[in-house]
Image (cartoon, rainbow, N blue to C red; front, side, top):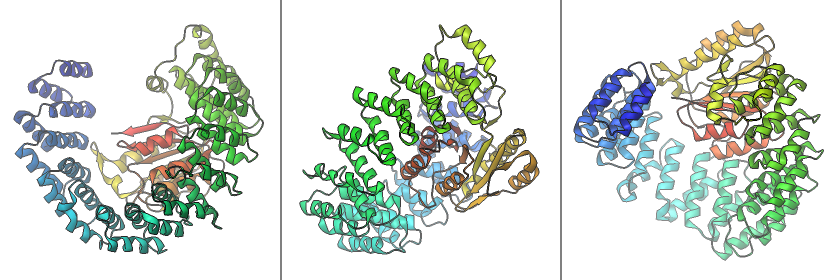
Length: 628
């Protein structure tokens, strides 16, 4: 009722008094108070600003107070700027509120924001990083001295930001610093990444030669940055250096060069891909295939189709995944042919690709895959049918229910719940009886609504259904988990929910708990029966306390080492800041590669919005939940 009233007030361009009344009526509903505060911010008046100031001072919920701070930034009255400055500069304030105030003052940049960010940048802890990020919004002529000082900072991230900020000046001294960092095996990765940008902006064959020299790195983020930088070179001498390095004895170097050809504008770049496409090393061929797809030359689709039918299954799988970007009739027919084949290494990526494209004529091949001996093939078929959101898919899945058990039965039931919105369990008869009565006229509901409707009476973890009996819970215990969401810390909320779900798991459930900050701490080496070890698990969870940074990739890699696991629940409040791979896109790429044949479901739960966590779930058959 309150939501309807709120919508009506917005439609009528309501005055402040009406919103005040709505705010008061929502005293027990955080989300609605937050929505009211956001609406009041749009009024941008002295009176609305005074209301926002009062909300910040008195509301008990940090999310509502943060919304008030953002609203004060929209108003930009003197009192607003004063409050924002006070919050941003106060070390006693809650961390997330300080960050909100800093971002509001510096994006877009204000005079007050510059002074506060400069002051906070000299503090210790994570807050100074946000201050430096705020300073990046200001013209270099105002910040140059600060960035030169940053080059000597003990934090590699601050030093890296300084290098990138100063790179447009194209100074020889900075370029020398970048060369030394790239060549130095002990230099911090973040400094190496910034060094690539410095030399990329400098351009020329000298920079290209440095890039080739260090391209044998095993750091996937550095490899990607090097290939992008090499691909941006425009001079003929650089192109010659890249072409020569395609025959380098180190396959890592050849792979970086092959990937650089994807964006290199030199006239012969596309033709040069023929050589790495024949390379005996898979990584080189995969890089060449990605470049073929990126270039979108006249023959790109034909090359990918040819390689998709090659003898090497791993290379074929890469080509198949790239064909999603070329949804022609010819590609669709080829994918249908490959999905119906006998090689799981080819059929699974072909089914995944068809699931993305969901052509109507692919239904028979999904039906066939559902009957395959290999369970990963059947999982891929179920997921593909779920993505199609067609009535015919429901028919096929309902028919398969009484032929599966365990993980596959759970996959089918989860798919049916998502397609229909019905909360039925694992009994095939219930589904079959219902479907027989409605299938002629049934229209699949909106996916989001179907998910909500289907969860009634189920065991869930942060709203995600627990369908598996072989799962790994990854729990972030980094320092920022001490922050408040509402009136509880994120850590306390996480512990409470984990304890609840562990207590509800059935007799057959096996699980492991992996806690991570900058370190990875598994509870056990393998999955263990939960019921038999419940008290030990509960005691361990109760002792958790926040510390350190956020190492998501290594935590996921540890979970993948559990060969019997088929489901991962990842909870975190931030994007990765530590670990073997930190860059978000590189983590997504590597997890997709690792999971191509494993078909592990990865559900993600994020405190606050996270593009990375959302993509990780969507790309690996899971659900994404955002805790506000």
